Amino acid sequence: LHRYKLEAFLMTSEHPIVNEMICNSVFDCNCYVREHLSDIIGEKRLTQAVHNLCRQLLAEKNYYSAVSEIEALGKIGDANAIEYILKWLSENEQEIISQKQFFVLKHIRIALLKLDNISQSHIKTFDEKYIEFLKDYYIL
Image 1 (cartoon, helix red, strand yellow):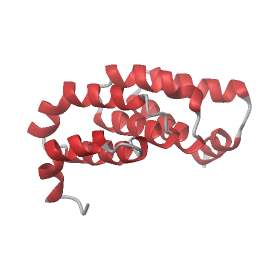
Image 2 (cartoon, one colour):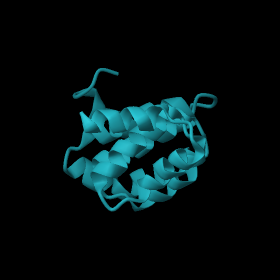
Image 3 (tube, helix red, strand yellow):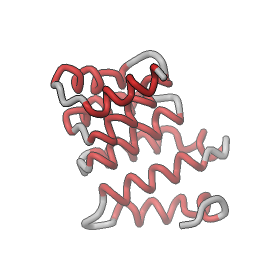
Image 4 (cartoon, helix red, strand yellow):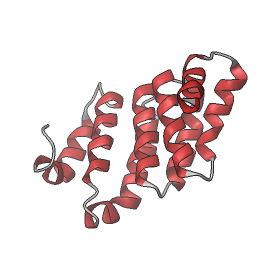
């Protein structure tokens, strides 16, 4: 009940200090906090969080937090985030593939579809490299 009330407050508040605290929460040491507040950032489309999300993503080691950060970047729609997403992917692809954490690739693809809506060059390159890992697990 308390979590629901807190989440409802965070989602509906437009107070600048509350939004700033939400944006800064992506640096929290707790991966569950980073994951959940990144989801809120994405739902609220807090454009002021893009820099924090990109910075944290480059240091992120938790797949679930990374996915939430990536999805938030996709929902916000700042195409500059593509560079950070692809950099994170290139640094983590060996582990993602060896551990069969293909859900991460699925969420990266979803974000790229939202961010690369003009040229589609990044999604084409992504598909050429990773679609084989997704086709058996997800309907595309």
